Amino acid sequence: MLRMNRLALTALAAALVFAVGSRAADSPLASLKKGTPEMKSAGAITFGPEGVLFVADPQAAAVYAIDTEDRTASKSNDRPKVENLDEKIASLLGVEPKNLLFNDLAVNPISGNTYLSMSRGKGMDAKPAIVKVDRMGKVSDFALKDVKFSMTKLPNAPEDNAKRKDAITCMAFAKDKLYIAGLSNEEFASKLRAVPFPFADADKGTSIEMYHGSHGAVETKSPIRTFIPFDIGGETNLLAAYTCTPLVRVPVSQLKPGEKVKGTTIAELGNMNVPLDMVVYTKEGKQYILIANNKRGLMKVSTEGIDKVEPINSRVPDKAGLKYETIKGVEGVVQLDAFDKEHALVLIKTASGYNLDTIDLP
Image (cartoon, rainbow, N blue to C red):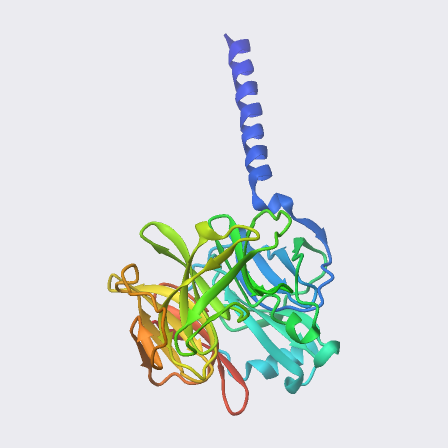
């Protein structure tokens, strides 16, 4: 009997070891290898599973998945508030504040720590950098050296240097896929790609066209500036904002390599404007989209009736489709991300520099 129990325990232990090993092998982290990414630039960023930070390198037409090892859930309710953030980062990186460029920010949903992608220097001599700001506002360099990472390259990026910066304009992760927006070198230049993670080779992407109501024309070469995944009727869509400022719905089920897809324009939010960043949130049981813009301030867009809104297929005045309101008292927002269920993190440009803060979701 004792022997049988020992055999049973041995078998159970082996099964547990196998199960743990199997789970480890199934983890997305298993696809990452230690090394130093040879990044040429650091553009759009977003978080995926288990603290993985996706970093776009538009100059190299590549995307890196980097293990931040930042997987400890915070018990703190602190929210960062950092004035003169550009001066603090410049001192940390050993450059002048005027030689810093903020490219994007993303909040780690596990820890609440903020990561910013930067360019230090000007023009072709600029170097990429990733900076971390914790909940207490402490700023540190996230060194791109001896980290676990993987990489995928885009096969058809623009060859022109002026357009290469738009090879990747925005990214978002949803349901085991990284969605990447940007331009290609093809005639129908505007692209959306759905890349499985762990990474496989990136495909040619889906060409996206849309009707721009305020321009009165179908456009195929305008890049998506920012987008978010959004479920409509149980189906995942991407809500994409373009310059001048159409809001377009694209079901992810239509994103097939080499295909041409026409998105559904569901709003015109005002011309002479560039959308900079957007998040979706829920308040009092209703869903809203918060959009930061370079000319038209911070917009709160209602998603009520988003599944029934009449598509915009003809020229319209400055505004049409989904309704929105401009949030007063919050000026100069150039980047934002969801911080928690009640707050958004914002990077604000002021007359003297840049501040990092949180605001109540309106």
